[in-house]
Image (cartoon, rainbow, N blue to C red; front, side):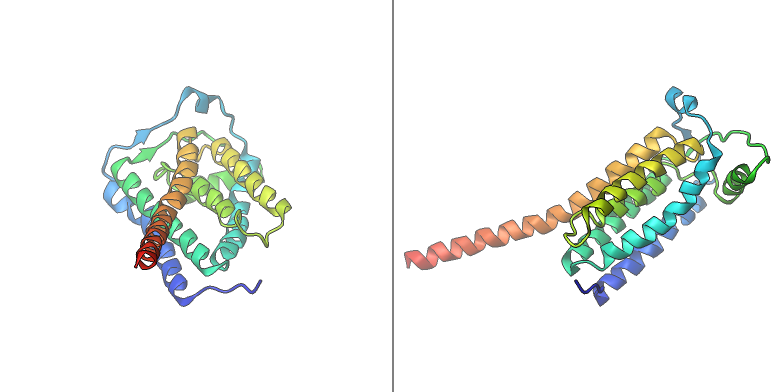
Length: 222
């Protein structure tokens, strides 16, 4: 199958990328003085800090890039559906970050080895806010959504694309970047966004079929 992306989808993709940046970084302009909620539960407190999972946290960017490219370059209509779902999810995230500012308490990490230093660097780079829902988990699950309907993608890679997000979920929890509520909401939002953006398309298709059938019945009766 020849893979390409239409001009209209490129525009939608550019808008989605721009909104992603505005959602994650721009919302801090509105929320820095607001009260931030901590959704940490007792279960979250039992989850240990595992610094080596920083390799999964950073490594998943490669997975995102590959699967998003596969999603953007599939059948034009399905690619547009995927891009619109991604954009819709970022819009919802924008309002969540502004209306429900969140934070968590990060652990004390000693500068003892490469993994700990990597985690300390992450904490320095990424403020403990804009957590609910988790964009890391949202994007990882969208990476699976991007390829799950594509017949040209082998089954082993589809299974691989389910496993990788699960490791990402583990990493954001064991690095104390997110809590369980952030992870679950990220996955639910990805699925809901894909469903709702496809619902309108399917509704139009049903209405068109119904009208076509009505016109056919009228012509037949005449």
